[in-house]
Image (cartoon, rainbow, N blue to C red):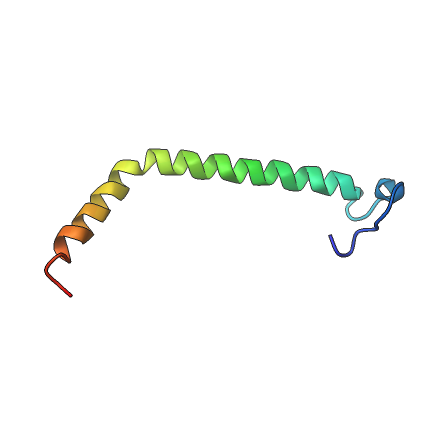
Length: 65
C-alpha cells in the first residue's frame, strides 16, 4: 500500500476506520478468497449453459469467414 506506513512497529497504529495496515491486509486476503470461491461456484453452476453457448456460436459461424 502506497499510503500505509512502512517499517516495523508502524502497522499497529490505526490507519483508517480503526483498522491497522495488517488488518486491511487480512481483509483484502479474505475478500479475494471469497471472490475466487464465488467465481468457481458460478462457473460450476453455469458450466452447461456456457458449453451450449460456445457450441452454438461455433456451429453457427463455421461457414462464415
